Image (cartoon, rainbow, N blue to C red; front, side, top):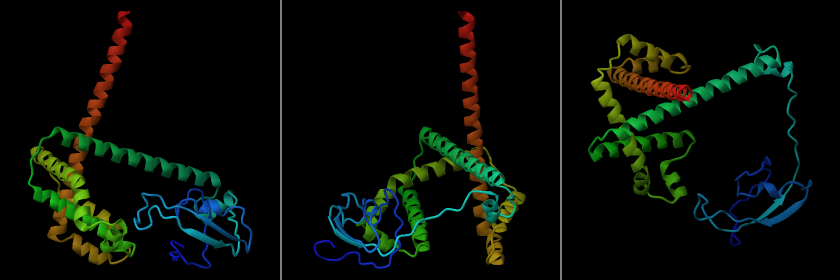
Length: 277
């Protein structure tokens, strides 16, 4: 209850007790350990001042909890049988461990690659002074908002509900996105300018290969997807995607070459220092 008005009234809810779980309020999970079946407990907790739902921020509700049953999570034994249940191809636990280790390594390498590319693009954009009309920033804000809307719709939400939860107007959200949109617009223009100067080209074979890769994993409406990707507009979008990818790779190779050259000079200077002693 908050100010004698219920804001949560749930029965028969299964709640996994995890440390630092923020739902329904930070500190709630820590109140439950030690309670017994059919035991009641009443306690107060304060919502943080920066709680996303501003109407609850700083409030101190009273919770009344009754434990109906207690369950214990029993994890399966890690053995060869467990490995084969995960995937019949893994006959032993060691094979499963090796696969998991390889997957984690690939993810880490991919994350490192993406981070390096982002740093290179940002560095080049910072060094390049480009002037562009404000409409490009507004268009990028629209694109970011559409991305956010698609994400919300996938979870059954809406932009209106999101704004109410954040206690913001759409104008305020657009203003928050302005710095990111400006950065994205500048980077896009820089990449386009470099691609133009380097005369970066993409062949029909490369476009076809990319479209084939896009449709390979499709299980539903594959024919419709293929038809769409074969349209002139879609092929042009794929072409621009590949041009951008090639341009980024070009910049990354230059950056790596510069780092290698810098490392060689450092090694040489160290060696010269040793010889001069």
